[in-house]
Length: 93
Image 1: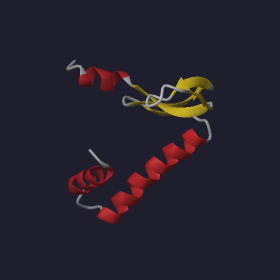
Image 2 (image 1 turned 90 degrees about the horizontal axis):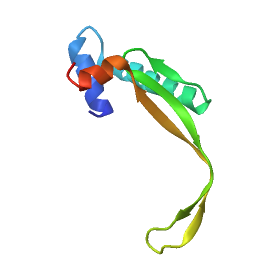
Image 3 (image 1 turned 45 degrees about the vertical axis):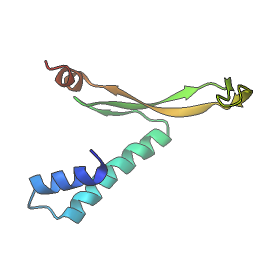
């Protein structure tokens, strides 16, 4: 499902809301999650999962095309851990 499909589904299930308002709400939620992660905070949505940021140390990598060693800088990457309810639903429990 992509963002526009999510917006359309929410708008269809809530006919009392305008689609532009649903779009603004969805965009605000995603922006707030992104801003929280960018500032190093953890975002937890009970029953769904938790978003956090993990730091990857600098390392020596390998260029797969040439086989030459390259320096890979340290970086932060987003990490998602599923909540128990979502994990149970995915596994048919």
